[in-house]
Image 1 (cartoon, rainbow, N blue to C red):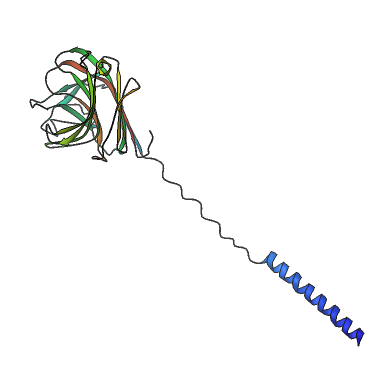
Image 2 (image 1 turned 180 degrees about the vertical axis):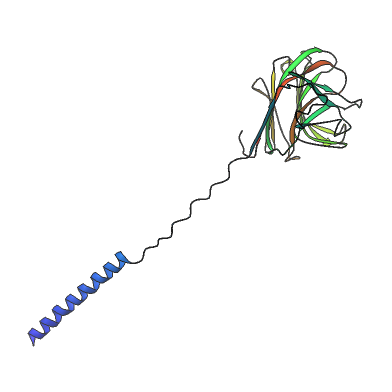
Amino acid sequence: MNRIQNTFRASRRRLFAAAALLALLAGCCGKQNTTASAPAVQPPPPHVVSYATKFPQTENPISEGVHWVGGKTLGVDWGDVSTKPGYAVGHASAAKFGDSVAVLTGDWPPNQSVEAVVDRRKVFNAPEVTLRLRTSLAKHLCDGYEISYSAKDTDSDYFIIVRWNGGSGDFTVLADGQGKQYGVKTGDVIKATIVGNIIKTYKNGVLMGTAKDNTYIFGKPGFGFNAGKNGDYGFSSFSVIATDATTF
């Protein structure tokens, strides 16, 4: 009897050992999940658009292959810009606020950085050079942001950041400053940027002013000059880069 019990116990031990081995083998050799994990979705690269010119042609109004539209040609109530090689100048309308305006065509991302090199020749009265951000131009409508510098080279020079509200003479001053440090002359580089709702302007790389405004979230870059007869002055070059990223 004891021999039978011992044999039975030995058989049970062998059975349990075999069962454990099978379970271990099943765990090691069972069907593996061969489905590869999906790769992480990468955001699309930023949309970047740029344009640069040294005004190589003689044109009135500026076009450069239909890259530009003008304040008189399209907007009616403002003036156009003309060019000759290396020089862009404004032709204001007869209206009190008939600034000359040139706006780039095409689709432009909202965050924009615009700069131009000043060419001041013989000036009088109130010469003013202007950069434009997020501008829309249509018949009897011009809106967006204007950043302007005085070109008199006196203690009464100034800069302004202005929101154009659409109609001729309808504008809101967002920031300004007065003093000779804001005046510009030949060779000075003026720059204006907008990222989100923050507008900044620079002269020769130095920050000159900042403004905040939520009105316009899109539009086109451009440039221009103020109304009236103020002498012979303009830009010798212009460039812009725009992106939907938060840095240029």
